[in-house]
Structures are given as C-alpha cells and as structure tokens.
Image 1 (spheres, rainbow, N blue to C red):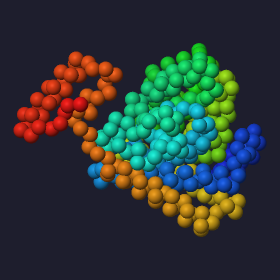
Image 2 (cartoon, rainbow, N blue to C red):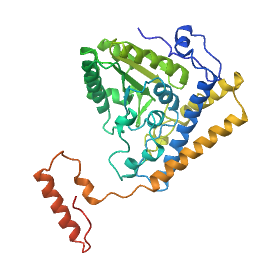
Image 3 (cartoon, rainbow, N blue to C red):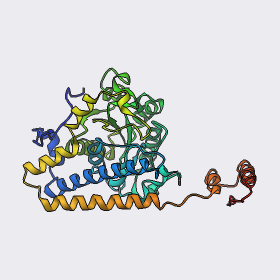
Image 4 (tube, rainbow, N blue to C red):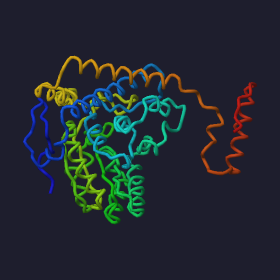
Length: 363
C-alpha cells in the first residue's frame, strides 16, 4: 500500500512536518549536519550551472543538467555508508560529488577526452551510464554478488521515470526480488522523459510497479532533502540487514532541459516550471535554517566560497583535459590483443597517413 501523499518532513516554506515515524530516522541531523546538507545542495547546483556554461562555451560536448533535483540526490547520497555502492545514470552529478568524486574528474567524459572520469572502486559510485536503464541490471548483479559473498552492504540504482519503461529495469526488479538482492531502486520522477510527460510512462504511481513485483515501495517529496535522507536510510538499512530490495520514488522536477541539446520550451508549459520553482529544494532548506536560527552571513559566505572553489576546479579540469591519442580508440576493448582490433588499428593508421601528416596511432 502506497501513501496517498509523498513523505515530507519540511514544507516549501521551511516549516517542519509532524511525521514522528520518519523524523526519527533523521533525529541525529543537528545544526551542523543540516548546514552540511545545505552546502552540498548549493555546491552541486553550482557544479551544474558551471558545466552547462562550459558546454555553451564549446568546452564540453554535452551535459545533462540536474537543476531542481539536488535534494533527491544529496539526501540519498548522505544515507549511504562507505562500503555501499551507487550505480548512476547520466544525471547524478550530485551523488558523485557527495561520494567524493573530485570536480576535475566530472567533465572529461562529457568533453569527449575520455571514456570515464574516475575509478569507481575508490568512491563507491560508477561512472555515468548513458544507456537508459542499463545500470539497474548492473546494480542488481553487483548486489547479488555481494549478498553471496556475505557482504553487509546496500547497492543503489539511480534512474529516472522514463527508464521505468525500459526492459532493463523490469528485469532488474524481477531478479532482485527472486534473489533477495540488497539493492535499492531509486527513481527520480522528474515528470519528463525528454519530451514525454510521466503520465505516458504510467497511469498509476511508478512506485506501484515495484509493489507488483513484491517489494516494498515508498513515494517521497524529492525536493525535501531530509525526507529523502530518512526514506533512503530506511531502505538501505533494510538491504544491509538481509531484508532484500526496496523501491523509492522521489517526486521532483527537472527545471532545466533534458540535456544541453534539448529545448524544453517546445513541449513544456512555462506555468508548470514556474510552479515548481516555488518548491525549489535549496530555498526550502535555506528557509528552514532561517526559521531555526541557524543562518548567518558568515555561513552564507563560507558556502559561496566553497561553491566558487569547486566551480573553479571543475572548469580547470575541463579545459585542462588533454586530447586523447587516436590510438586510445582501440585500447581497453579487449583485455588481450585481438586480431580484429589489430587490423582496425592498422587501417586507421593508413587513413591518417593519407592526409600527409602522420599522427601517432600505435599503442
């Protein structure tokens, strides 16, 4: 049974909501922790705006903005333990940052200078998955392996509402239930799958699909960072303790385009976007801090300075990324030499020679 209304602990105007059951899950979030959540919200929004600007300036080939979805990502990422593992799509930049991915490592893939940006094993989060929904199966397989090895960890698969129409997600849900895999399916329902509204993905709440597979599911206000933290803590704790998979539908909104090659004004009413701006996840926690006497000019300045430094590092990492050698195209395709790759490398070398100036293509 799904609650009629998404779980909420903080209203858009900053007032607390009386939900003792879920408030107890974040009872340890005091003034310092609340400020830390707000700082991560601000910093990750700055990452997003800086990367978008870099793309517009020709420094990145593409970027998938997360504007408006910061609370869903920051809140859930803060619920993870160091040994947990997150499998992300192309929009979870805030999850990557909160897991410890350096700003300099976030842009090489989007610049086209590398196939990936960081070593997943050092931070417990994968590089972005571009194939929609594929990471659901990857997360489930990893969780099944961890379960068989006796590891008491949780695995989280992040995806959007549109991905729930992919067969990969359906298969992942089925496998997770059948094998009691310790995986949490975290759906960010941002209302739009590129240009298609969520009503075309499902006539009923998306969380209801998970219940049909036999796993517990909850809907949460995805713009309420405390509520997201609470429900994710509950789901990941259950997974770690052997309780099996769970499904979280975070109700949020993509205030920007699907990617920087998209124009949302062609399919989305402006009034809808304006209505969601009033539910801005950053303003909500700013108002909560103000209401509870936790806001100060010094704190504001510290947050802004941190965001500026992260943006500077992100820009430097993007502009300073070296162009890959042509030979890199043929590397890491197979673990050992392969005759087809050897042949293709030689053909490409000959192609470059045809221009009269030899470029290095050998390994």
